[in-house]
Length: 143
Image (cartoon, rainbow, N blue to C red; front, side, top):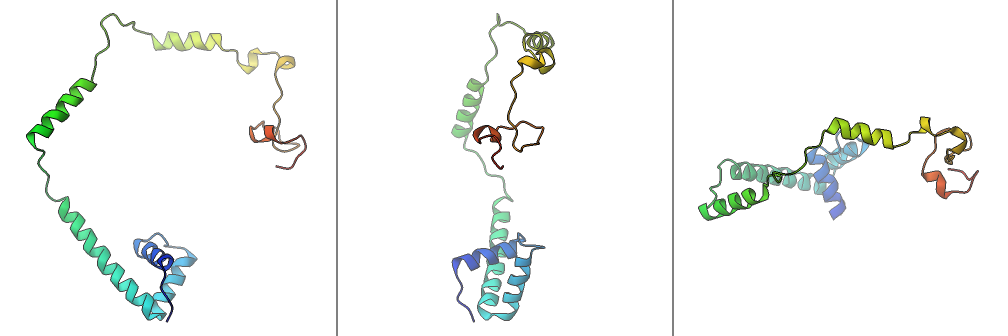
């Protein structure tokens, strides 16, 4: 017989809930439940409690709750106040034209001559991909 700690209870709860399925830890818990009376009793209690909680939660959601009229009126008023229409004189923006204009203003790598492009450091000596992580390390430092 072994002492049963909070960590053991957490592990047993994970086992009962299926979080350990397919792991070596599930096999360990299964062995403990079948060979140790403290674990077996805790398992039986936890399974019974879990079923009771599920039943109670299911019963709570079976019936729709009625919202008191004054609360419903306040909610509707708050939602109506939150929805605002744009001003009548608000400009209408053609997104396609705005995107095209932004694309033209922004230089891309292909438009910048290679000689003026900044060279970014890479994370490994022969790695062709620049990365932010390598900027903080001195050149040639291991990743």
